[in-house]
Image (cartoon, rainbow, N blue to C red; front, side):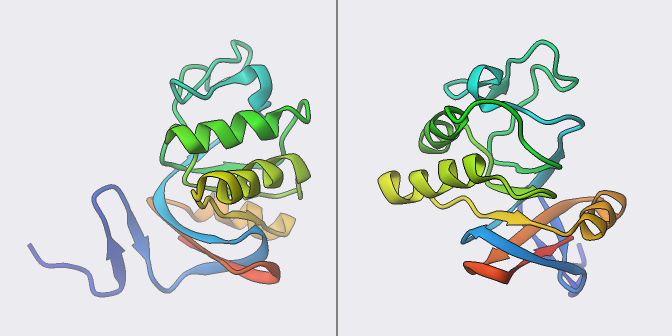
Length: 160
């Protein structure tokens, strides 16, 4: 089977190497995975089972879906500051997202990823895109994503 030289291919993703959006790295790291676009904000505290890796908020449109090993795309988070501890535990357990792309900066989500890196040595990049870039990503994403994030403003690229 011929391989497309313009793409990166893994077991679960097909990521074009030439299309990307630049954003701000809220937590540095690299991730490549299939994506999951959350239709509504999610509170990890009470809304996510960090042992099973499933959305357990019965009011969420994606109730029962897994974030494990996927790049989660979400406009913004909601809920308690305790969400950071649930996210960190999910990352430690291997049931959390492989990467996170947000439209709005979120300190709680970022802290969860930073704590997972500092305490458990598991890196999950968190990227914030400008509103128009976020919408472009939603409109253009077909397969997987790749995130390359170096801490700081403008330090992140989301390949799609």
